[in-house]
Image (cartoon, rainbow, N blue to C red):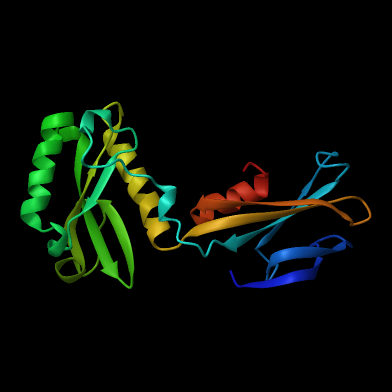
Length: 212
């Protein structure tokens, strides 16, 4: 979604006769990028919430905090992700396999997954051999390892979901939700924003429902 960052901008609320002065980043085109919810005084007498998405331009790799590989794997609560593509930093197949062997000994083979990396402009991460990538011979490398916390009861499902989230974060598919609360006259009574929403689809659902 294209955005324009201005101090203030007059926004026309879709399907209403309301307009208001918005602060901060705004959507360039309103067709499918703005949501209007009716309220009953949730914010200082507001009757409508007008919401849109803004691409989060910051480096948000901190949204997923992997556990330190030097800690005891049995104590990991967030899982550990290692990328062994850079041999100069102790990477390569030998280092990958050594790390996997140590992790398997600590938490069991069902909690340790090789991860494919598909690099073709953007990058996509997935549990090895679960995604039918094109050009597998040239653009896919089984170069990463994900260790699922020992107390996770469905480790494969957890691994698949985490790699989807990690792919979104790495490729900048992270969003902010900007909301202005209006009274009946179209006056802004409050505005707020939430950042770090991973994945456009999830951000759209949250923006539409107000559940964020």
